[in-house]
Length: 326
Image (cartoon, rainbow, N blue to C red; front, side, top):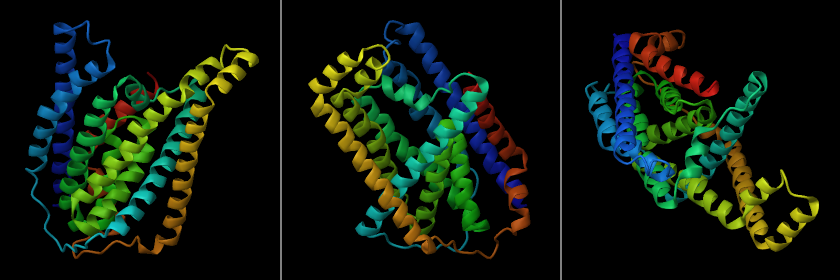
């Protein structure tokens, strides 16, 4: 019974993902056919596949997931104070950066073995977007939709069979859904952390806001600092410029260099504080047990070794492999 339940749940996510890919492809095809001269612009090209995804793909995916009944169980709700939310943000910020470093290390090692670098899709996309497009899609829409789908809808349906199971499932499916190894490490870790927050509060608004602020810091703020500091130009010039030319560039742009290193220092301090908080508060990360919790020896086979979940995970793993060897 439980295996069929998770199979149906996985199948809805699989069909939803296929529909999202389909509407994205249609959007890109329409853009190329109707306005090919604008498709060279990163923001316009992004909108050509993002708008169909958010207006058509995600609503259909949500409707499909809702066809799976919520597995009612004991739910404990707790309020979250402003202080707790700030602490949660600092901890999540540290986890995201640690996960990002881990993902970068893994893809770098893979790049060494295949003798070519592994492209990071999110970096490539971000570098092509203007601030408004980035704000709308990465800071506002993505957190709202992703938290609703991978926290509220998923955990509400899985937590009856164990909160820990639901949290890990939320992180794993969220990470796989990004379909590239660069993002998998930090989205899995972030997904598990947000999943824990959601199981405690049962208020998806908390994780949406945490997600928004993290994306804002890693996209809008990071891009602003990069542009204003002139760091990208300096990094590019290091490949061809002489020592004298580099010295002149650094001297002429000392204010920008200070801005960049000031931002880097703030990130470093936040990550260190976040790690300390995670260590100090580690005993608070305790999950509640449920009456129908799956036994330890059967959790993986019940949740993942079924048709629906195999289709969903298989689709995403294929995408990850294709990204690695593109």
